[in-house]
Amino acid sequence: MLDVLIIILALILLFGLLYFEKQRDRKAALPTKTLVSCLFIVIALVQPHPLPGYFYLLLIGLIFCLGGDVFLALPQEKMFLYGLVSFLLGHVFYVIAFFYAAQINQWTWIGSALCLVFSCGIYLWLRPHLGAMNLPVLFYVIVITIMVAGAWTVFGDGKLALNGRLLVFIGALSFYFSDVFVARDRFLKPEFMNRLLGLPLYYFGQFLLAFSVGVLN
Image (tube, rainbow, N blue to C red; front, side, top):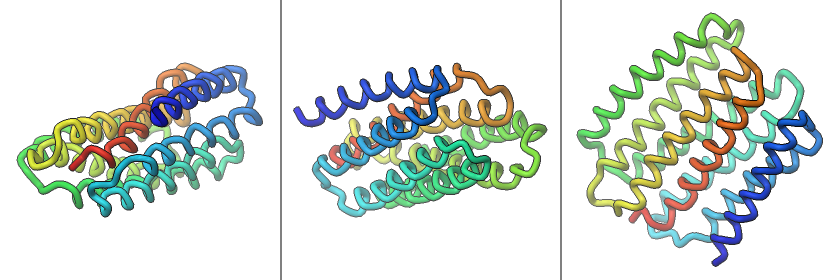
């Protein structure tokens, strides 16, 4: 019941966040976004923790992502870089969590190959527009690609519960594709459509990952 109430509250806040983003009301968007992001941490905390190591690693990743959300919501130009670094650290802890929970298997290599091809395409698409952000974005693309490869590893480990594996896999992919819209908005074409599509994908992914701590084992 608590999970349901948290999700309902998150949905209400998400609709509010999208409204404020549409209105370009940064003063209202910042606290709203912060509250929604706090809720995916709360979801992780209230779940059972059958794999304590996985829980703590993922929780640290979620906290770094919360920091990234706050930085990206701030108007100062340098905050984008701070947000990028914060999300990058979040992905690093996701990577450690995924490979802590699952053993490398054939899906690791299949997923890595697919992610590498897609990520190379995304980077080449962005590169002419990156300027001084070229190296930070390249490094971020590498790390998030490894994160998704880790999710493929979890998906392919049959020793783990299927519903938990699906939550990790779909959650990581949703996070990955939400970042495509962040990049498009920052470097190619800033418009509300990026947030309309990217924010629900992002929060969907984060909440799935938060729920996974309770059902992966």
